[in-house]
Image (tube, rainbow, N blue to C red; front, top):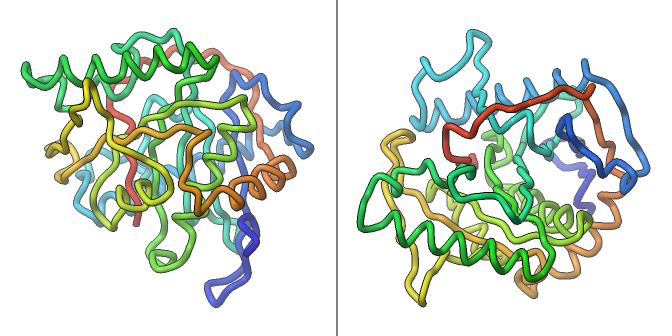
Length: 273
């Protein structure tokens, strides 16, 4: 199976990676396009896909979208975005990869703004669990990543697209020197189950899991899962290695450099259609 370009009854698809404005890792990719207009077009396509899918799921209200139907979050400009494009060059799947230094404070993370932090008995457990992960990232010299903004068009719900996207994220983390990561993931459409199957595991502290919770902002049950780029499911190890080789040749679209100091005002939620 070609994890980057596929021809099926659903049509021909290809992958593109969008870089954040501050990206310093373009040397890892052999195909780099510096095009602010194309970057903006593709990012807007991902935001419109998210808006349509999330609205259809009842996860957001129309007032949370722009006039053009985009679901915009402050983290978007600071993140890498893995996109799948169809034959018409339209975004049919997307996910976001926000990379932090391992010295980042808990309060600077999107996960610090989940409803769990408003609960006095659960907030300390969440913070200690994340701080433990950050300490481990520092010991290994890894970045700390928040994965979110996951959306897949309805036509691809029963395909391998969701698995392909997550496998590619593991490959991207390895290309960038390794990472520990976290994601707040909906249980809708088996999204959290997919991440678990590929190597995601519950966030824990002192042997106790950070439990699932209901997010009233998105109207659904959520899980907080962690991942380690060195410890995926053994079933997908060979696919990740192949993806890493292919990812080096995947087009990377880089915008013009702009300063972005937007705070993370909302959790980095992952959804899948």
